[in-house]
Length: 98
Image (cartoon, rainbow, N blue to C red):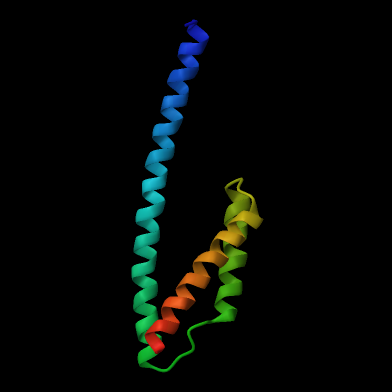
């Protein structure tokens, strides 16, 4: 193995280790987020509030798109990601209201 290939293999290993740590952070962060959204869902059900809040969702999407641009992440990807999460949250909120 040449020095360049050895160095590339080391860099690849480092990048993969970082990706693994970040994946764990994402999962734990989503878990924490859903703890709060479950509490919101219960609160909404207790007070007969609608499971969805389109005005807040629009604000959150715009905020996330800006954060994505600031982070050099595709804003459309960020929007799709948040829309997926919001859809899951609404499903959970609807279950609480049943």
